[in-house]
Length: 348
View 1 (spheres, rainbow, N blue to C red):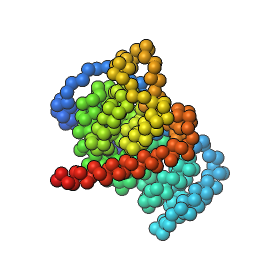
View 2: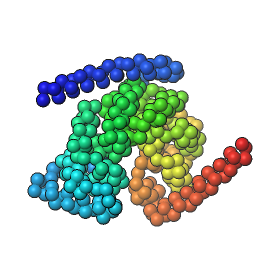
View 3: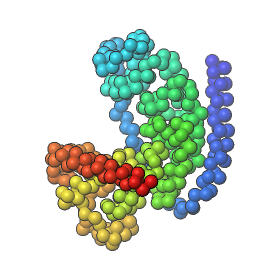
View 4: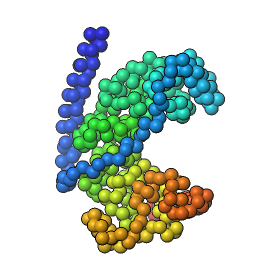
């Protein structure tokens, strides 16, 4: 027991040294980013990953029944010739002990059957290591489902590096952990190398505080291409008349560009969204209450809502009408992409 505690202390000290070293490594990169003015941080909305995946405490007598039910459901959806049934049941029981909801366990394990190959003792060791970094119960399964290499034991250096990089960008710890839990793909070496490029790209348009808010709400910004991100920014800026502050209040970058275009076009044709003129845009940026004429739904109302809420509440239309329009728009956008690819190849 004493040896275990000593090991943990030494481990934490090594992480502290790593933080200092990595901060110095990235400070030279950060100095090349144009200086932006300090502002009061924008309050962040509820985290992308909610606690809905957690269930209430299950009485001990019902655990085995729950395990049987979950295992039967997983087995019915997947052919698992490699599976050790006893080991799989132990994994399910362990996830139940972490208060994950039945449906969440089924969905994650069905989508990532490779997780069932690892013995439960490996799960427990890995979770203990994640706890050392500060991850919470509701974050364990998303992180491991998105980065199986942690269970292999081969991605811990990458995890350290991305957390330290986010630290060097002055992103608060709770948001650093949530970024990783919401988008575990960021742990890969390739994405780590491009994180600074993608973050620097945001600083060309947004202030430092706005960029910090954006990546906390939209973790995919660290893995999406710069070109894709810029297409969304340009569309909001030129086609919708939306500026930085309103963008930071949404999770628009968590959706594909087609979702943004479809929602905007539907609202515009339904008569509930109108491109604001330059005076309205300027007044909105300065938070002046004198301009109420446009009464456009907010960007968050447009993109962060369910089809039912968006179609009926904001557009007074049916979900069926929205789905029909969405299918039509998808065909148009695919044709545009094909034409664009053809013109690019011709130019070469």
